[in-house]
Amino acid sequence: MIEPLLPDPPPVRCRRCHHPVTKGPLYDGYGESCARQLGLLPPHIPMPRSEQPDGPTLLDLLDTTEN
Image (cartoon, rainbow, N blue to C red; front, side, top):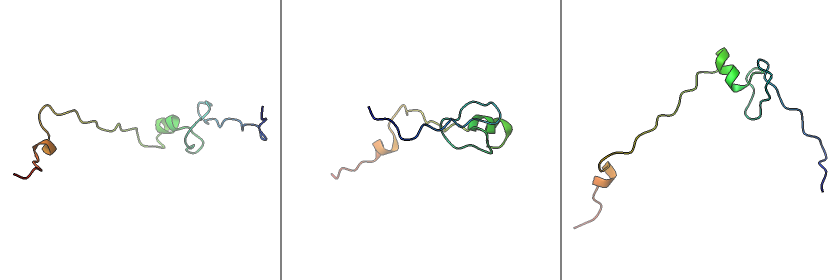
């Protein structure tokens, strides 16, 4: 078994809740969720999702065959 040369660094912890921040950057020492709660980051806006159309789409109506 290969031993690691350096030990893993201690986890970085949020200044507010003291939970380890596993991914992403720190925002003034706060994790992403705490930074959003404190107003350092804008609120999370979900991406809009389009529903599947019931009928044919514009690409379906486009006739690329030559008669």
